[in-house]
Image (cartoon, rainbow, N blue to C red):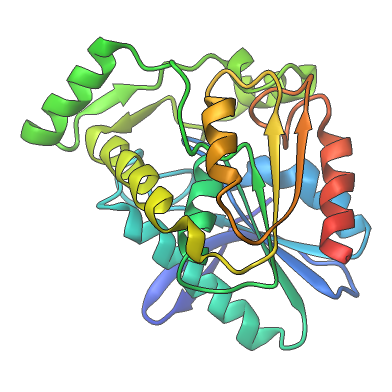
Amino acid sequence: MTIKKLSVQNRELLYYDWMPERFDSIILAIQGLGACADRWTWMAEYLSAKGIAVIALELDGFGESPGMPGYVKNFDVWVNQLGLMHEHLKSVYPGKKIILLGESLGAMIVTRYLESADADKAVLLSPAFVEGKVFSLADKMKAGLGILFNPKLHITLPYKHRDFCNSAEGLNYLARSKRELTRVTAKLSLAMMLLQLALKKDIANIRTPVFALQAGKDRLVNNDATKNVIDRIPSLARYKRYEDAYHSLCIDANRETVFADIAEFSGT
C-alpha cells in the first residue's frame, strides 16, 4: 500500500485508507508505541468488506513520518494530529458516523482527545493507562538521564515480538516489517509518561460512548490497574476482555473475533 498525504491547516498528515464504495461509518485508527499505521491492514480489510471505511493515521515519530524515528516534542503533537484529521473527516463526510479507535498508546491518545472533544463513538484496544513491569530500573534511569541531558537519546524498547501477539501471521508481520520501531527517544518516553498522568486526571470529562477491550494475557499493560481507570470513564458503553489474547489485538490470533465486535459496536 502507498501512504497518502493531506495538508490541513498547514500541517501535513500521513495516512492509509480503505474506502468501500458505500459506507455510513468511518473508523479513524491510531497505532500503538513503535507501530506503523499499516499494522491496521487486517482490521481495515475486514471492516471495509462490511461497509465500514477505515483511515489509519501515521503518528509523528513512527512509520513513514518525516523527522527522527522515535522522537516527538510532546504528547500534544499526537493529540493535535488526531484532532486535525477528525475535524477534516467531519467536514468532508458530513452525516457519516466517525468512530475513533486506538490501540495501546493510540488508545491513550484517543482518550486524551475525548477529554475535551466529542466523537460519535470510540474504541480502546488494550489501552496502556498503566504499564506492566516491562521497563527495568536501568531502563528508567537511562530515560531519566536522557530527558535531562540528551532528549534525543535512543532507548531500546524492552519488548519481544511474542509480547505483542501469539499469532503466526502476526509474528511474521512483526519480523518482516521494516518500519516498526524497536527504539524510541528519551523525549518520546517522557511524552508517553506525561500523557498517562494527564489523561487519568481528566478522564471523567469524556462524553463519547466508549467500547474498551483488554487482552487477558497482556504482558505490557497492568490489566487490573488499567481496568480501574477504564471504570472511571462515565460514558463507558461496553467492555470486553479476551482471556486468551495478547496485547496487540489487531494482529493476534483472536483478531477476527475482535473485528466482529468492533463492527457490531460501530453499527449500533
